[in-house]
Image 1 (tube, rainbow, N blue to C red):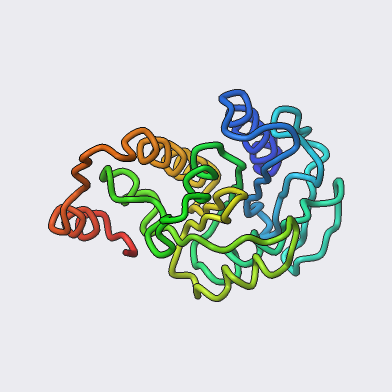
Image 2 (cartoon, helix red, strand yellow):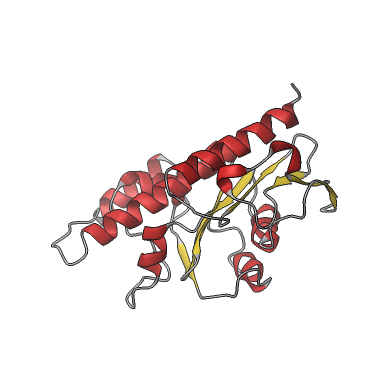
Length: 214
């Protein structure tokens, strides 16, 4: 089996796992990864994470031209914005995960530090998450907003929509977006309680030890 065939199978298996555990639903969510030849493999538009076909993934060449497979997700501008601005990006995943979306709807949601520093792992895997405003689905302005961050954030939250996370590879991106959703759930579960988040000193220790952009 070629390296690209293995990557196709991996993307579909990861997407199916996210779908089966309710982290996205219906035909929501999209995933992409850098192919061995420098192009991109991308989930098709209107497809379900629970039923992706490795052979039908959209394929782009290293010049960004669609050369094979079904028509790609309409949110390609989000994906290409991360690949173009953040060095080392090997995969991007976007979900419509319930708890993170709920957190984004709150009137006091923090735009600069959307995911609160409740655990070291959220900081390690995500850095500081930027909350972006509401956009219509597929609006290229979403990509423009990510480009405006100049590669400084590996994760953003689209208000009323869902998180988008870039990672060095597909496993890393999926692990990080799961951490984002889990921490959003923690934030909601503890809302109104006398929560003790990580201190500034504890955050600094994590940032220094794991070389996190913060």
